[in-house]
Image (cartoon, rainbow, N blue to C red; front, side, top):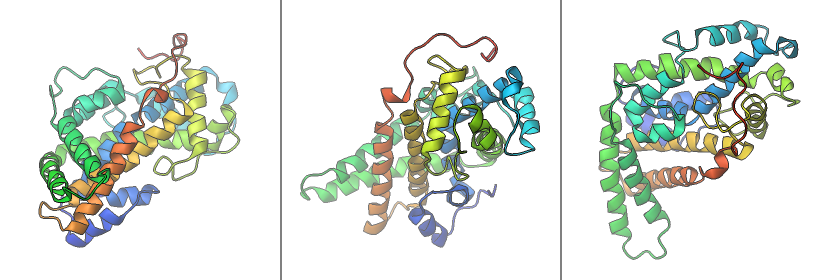
Amino acid sequence: MSTSARRPAAADRVAARSLRIADESAFTKAVDGSRTVAALYFYLELDVLVGCARLVAADFFARPHLYTSLGDGRLAARIAEFHARHGHDERIPDAAQRAEVYRAVFGAFAESRTGCSPHRYARAGSDFPKLTEEFVAACTAFAERVFDTGEAMLRERVRIAHRPLRGYLAGIAGDALTWCTEEAAASVARDRAYPILRDSGIAAVFGIPTAPRGDWPYAADPTADKLVEEISHRLAPGPHLGEGVPALTREGASRRQRAAVRGTEALVAVLDTPDDASPEQLDELITRGYTWGSALAELGPAVHRAALPALPSQISEA
C-alpha cells in the first residue's frame, strides 16, 4: 500500500467508486493515497480478530502439544514474536494502544468496537460519529423513499451531509494517520493476526478441517466465521476476549466482516465524490452509504456471546 498522501486522480476516483473489495489487492487499491482513513476504519471494525489471534498466541505456549503441525513453517516464529512483543513494540500495539489511535479518529464510534477506555491523552471527542450518522440517515431516507415526490430535496440532503463528512476525513489525512494505519494497525492485523487465523494448522487445533480462504477477511468466509466462534468459545469462555473486546458468535463475526468491507467502500466513495457530484456520482454515493448503514444496523445483540464464566487465568490479559 502506498504511503503517499496524494489526492487520487479523477480516473482513480472513478475506478475506486466502482471497485468492490473482495481480496487484499482490491482493498489495497481502494485505500491507497489519501484514502488511508478508510483502511483504518476497516482495522477498527475487525480489531476483534487481533484479540482472537492474541488468544491463539497465548494458547500456543499454554498447550504446545496441540500445535504440532502448522501449515506455514515460519508461523511458529511469528506467533512467538506476536506473543512476546504485543504492547511492547510500536508496530505491535496492544488493545489499549490501538484504541487510542481509533478513538482519536473515530471518537465514541470506536469505543463500541474496541471495548477499551481511551488513553488519557486521546482526543475527548470526534466529529465522525455525528457526521456519519447524518450521512447514513440521508442516504437511507433517499433509498427508502416510497414516492419520487421530494426526490430533489432528498438528494440535496445527501449533498449537505456528504460535504462535512468528506471535509473531516480529508482534513485528518497526513503523516500521522498514515503511520498509525500502515505501521501500527496494519502491522498488527494484516501482517500478524490475519496470517495466524488463516493457517490450516491453527484451524485444525479448533476442529475446523479446512483453513479460512486466503482473501479473508477482505471477503466473507463461513469457515473463518466458524473458527472465530470456536476460538471465542474455547479460549475465552466469557463475554470478552480478554482485552475488553466482545467474544463473537459465527453470525457476529460475519456481520463485523460485512460492516468493515461495506464501510471501507463507503468511506472511499465519500472521499472520492466531489462536492459538485453529478447525479450518477451521487447515486453511487447513496448506494454505498445505504449499504454501509444496512450493515451497521445488523450489528446488534447477536454479535456478542451470552455471558459465561470468567477468562482462564493463563490467557487473560494483565
